[in-house]
Image (cartoon, rainbow, N blue to C red):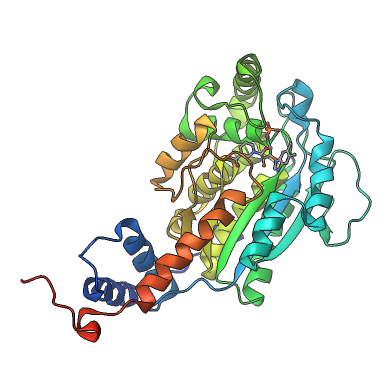
Length: 351
Ligand SMILES: O=C(O)c1ccc[n+]([C@@H]2O[C@H](COP(=O)([O-])O)[C@@H](O)[C@H]2O)c1
Ligand SMILES: Cc1cc2nc[nH]c2cc1C
């Protein structure tokens, strides 16, 4: 049996560093457990990074963009041209993620996997030309195996660049009009439930629009049912170029020992696919937020994820993950810099 690259082993976590970090948490000048989940996060990061005092100094943000043929079914509130137009906004500095990347002093790379309207080369954007968007999965498979492989590798290549640049935290973002339909279809297949439970407004459909979107998804699932016999097949029948790239990035990050902060609904679906392809990558994925799409919470539950924030976000672009980065950094700073009871001559709780 041939092994695909995404099936290769993920980095193990370090039990010694975990024990040392647990012991340190017990000694810091605060009632035991009083920093709640921030304590667990610091300990988990210590185990991943193999050091008692973890740190997330350099952040890499990669935005993967692609168009979706299923938009022809009238499933988005916005025109498809927005995908390409937003690419210029990302590199021009005016998008939400551009602002957040600046504020966080993060590296921001923008990867165009394929838009419906051909774009002139944009300085600062990596154009990969995988196709003019995916095919309409209401009628045919979204992409070929060859296209899926290029996209998975595009995600892996981004992790390699992040690592070469010395980054210790990766945020993947996505941009693609119609991609909540693809993500909801994948979630329906992953969770074995009807689209009425997972389809949502995306960029802003009204209730009738959401009901139509759910019908499109259910019909597509019925159309492809015979062929959906694994996560890779689901990805190429129902997915998107940017979703495939995120899957590749998440698995590669775990294989190369880079911590990932997962963004919204679409990214969480990509994370669940990545875990189905390679369960070893789950440990390396932290989850930033629980957003407004109804399917998001169900996907997070399936991942056993406890997201950091709940702000009603539904923007994408990696924005929710970027917003949660300061919280992770503060968890590390508290863990690394607080005084112990002995150092500060503070009385401990009697045994
Ligand atoms: O990340 C999320 O949770 C999220 C929820 C709703 C919409 N989006 C963004 O909106 C776009 C997809 O919405 P739609 O309605 O066109 O499928 C895509 O560019 C996503 O980045 C993102
Ligand atoms: C304007 C706009 C910006 C976005 N960013 C991510 N998805 C988006 C969708 C729209 C419509």
